[in-house]
Image (cartoon, rainbow, N blue to C red; front, side):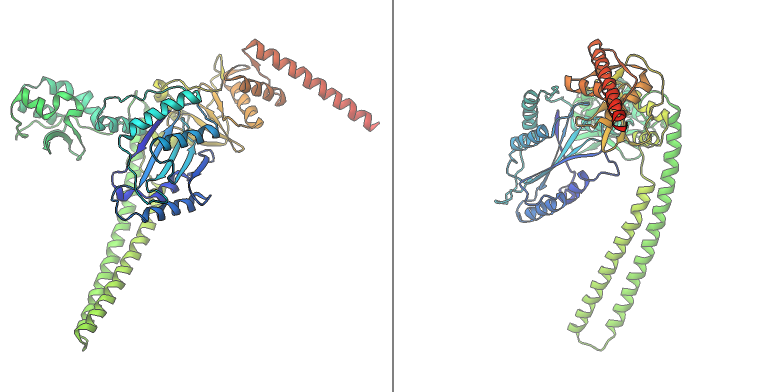
Length: 528
């Protein structure tokens, strides 16, 4: 289990109402939202509770810090804690941070490989109206997670600091979320060796110039920038590239000289991983999508500027008419203020209408990265996209929890069930079976903790299609018994690799046939 605070770059962007709207949105996915838990709020509705929290925040007039704390708690792939365990996790971590009496809303998300929980916390106390900002919260969260892992019998995670800088963590997050190469990662792979071999500032600038990069002063240190304006700290690429270390080795800093060689390569956000024909298709699709989106947004922007200019021109005309009226100075000032208010209202209305026009453009032509494009293609049924996602997930830790596996593969297609809810970034297909979610990661089928009998029967049928008649069950005793019962009651022609489970299945099958014959005979006797 990992707990992490999600930071906002600007405190003004932290809005408790918008945050609650995001974490409670199903995004047209039936399997995304799980349990919703509210604490210390008077309302039971998340929307009303969010408004209540916003009113509480407004009662604090002195504090200028961000008044919303966004906490993310993620569990290992395959772990599905019970609702009682989730409530315990939420209460324990919030108490550890000192937010035990504060208003908060926790929402469980199940639409990814890792079950996780978003917690929106009001940092303003509901009665004292004081704002709390815990220091070194990462340490308290690490201690709380370690204690909960022991008490709830969860697989432990590493809660010790990794030693990575903020820039390194952001680069790792970018590559993990988009599947595309970060600038820092590209510099490390393409330029670090040449930079270390440079014996003068001129040689160092030359190495960077050939890669389309530049080394410049920023504040008290050095940053590496590319031609698009992206930049990273030089010391993040390697500690030996800090300003102090470079000046020890090369002497006082010298700016980029003239006459440097032209770039022979440059950084691009290319997909990571082995070569794949889909990468070229992604590049073409992204370019076409970007062109259409930019064209539509440019038309909307030009129309906004035209209408805004017309409104301002009309205002100037009306003001000039007012100036020529035979009225006193005080009366004219009132008229000017009325005209200015009317202009401001019309411009604000125009901005709202323009923003409403942009929304469908961004919805129909979204910005796609490599992983989101693969997810969209996989959801549409492309087997190659699913395989590309699963190849990327090969290096991730093995999933835990109950699952259905097989001894061999028949090579059946992955999208075996028509009701696909979503495809995760690791290639796990989540099917909808009633109100339940059934997960297919290519190597196993996984059911939710409280899945229905229909879901279990569907899982066995899909597993038989993928792995053949002999199946292997991984999980606790209750899960294996549930699957054996599903095989019997659903009349699924499968056998289990475990001899004890197979013997149990045969016994139940014989008993079910005997009961069926007895019911038939009894019905016949009633008819006669």
